[in-house]
Each structure stands twice: as structure tokens, then as C-alpha cells.
Image (cartoon, rainbow, N blue to C red; front, side, top):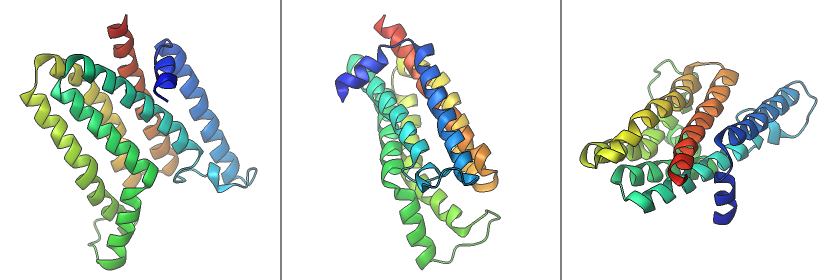
Length: 205
């Protein structure tokens, strides 16, 4: 797997972005065909856990983690390690569905207040996300301020792009249209992958 990711990471950034954009558009088209009863398998449904769209996202996560690991091994910056931990937790959460499962346990056993979200489970999932990804993000912030200048410089742009992903993953997921939310998450993760890859290629060169 590491050799495969290394070969993929060696491709030009533009080529890699085009490949993922084509895959993303294909997955969204399949989701539309499922909605319109052209495709029958729930594997293509928008928002399906471990469905087609999520499997494509796993590829982006794996590539991001691979590149961050290589960068951390080279420079040892604490904030790079923190980003690596954050994206690893995000991948594990998406793959296992931790926030969905724990969120369901919460609403089954605890009455949560109505805060205007679409479902009571949305609030429970946000709380679990805060405990998992939120704690890891706090660690990123801590390492940003306590680490070296190189790590801070690397993180300055990355955290802005990451904010785009968080906006769609949390805010639009709770109050917005599902197609807008899913498309925004896909776009956000592609932007993160493209930026990290462009820096990876520049360092490798």
C-alpha cells in the first residue's frame, strides 16, 4: 500500500486533481441516478456510509496521510504530526462511522435539547465530532503555537482550506441541502489533497 501511495504521490498535482474530480463527478452522477431509480443499489446513495462517494474520499485521506507522514519524518515538526493525527482520526471515524454510531446511542438514551437542527441526532453527532476531531484540532492549534516557524508557515494556508471542509461537514450538514453539503465536503477534501500534494511535490523536487 505504501508503494502504491508513493507512486500516486509522484504524479503531477494537476493530473491527480483531474483524476479525483472525474471520480467525484462520476460518484455524484451515480447518486443522482440512484435518486431517480436508474440505479438500484444503495451503495450509490448520497451520504451512504461506506458507499461509493466515501470510498473515493478514503483514497484522498490515505494519500494525505501518506504525504504528511513523509513530511513529518523529514522535518519532525510537531504541528505536522498533529495534522497527521487529525486526518488519521478523520479517516478512522469515516470508515468505522464512530460519530454516527455513538450519536445514535446518545439520542437513544438521552433527551437532547432542540437547537433548530434537522434531527436530534445531528446535535449528538456534532458533540461526538467535537470530542474526536475537535480534540485533535485543538492539538493542532497547540502545536502550531509551540512548534517551529516551518510548521506554522506550512499550516497558515492549510488551516484556511481545512476551514472550507469543516464548514460544509458541520454547518451545511446540519442546516443545508444534502447535495450542497456532500458536494462541498468533496470539494473541500480535494482542495486539501491538492494543496498538500503541491507542497509535497515541491519538497520532493
